Image (cartoon, rainbow, N blue to C red; front, side, top):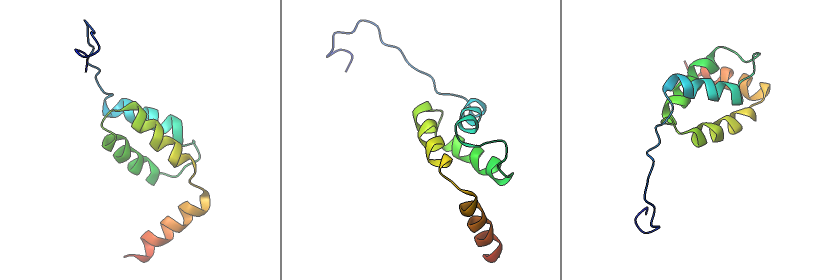
Length: 82
């Protein structure tokens, strides 16, 4: 692509580390009042985003929409699935 556009210099961007990804996701989606399981789930989500900031921002936006009722339903489902 760069050759077709006659670009002389290209830049290779590095992704975020897992810690940086988690910090960004936490800042974008989880408030301080969220429960502990989201920390574990959130770290897995951040890892799955592969260090791509746009993917993390997208997931953060989606996670902001989770309500307390959704959390209660999830917890009830987990308890009943055992």
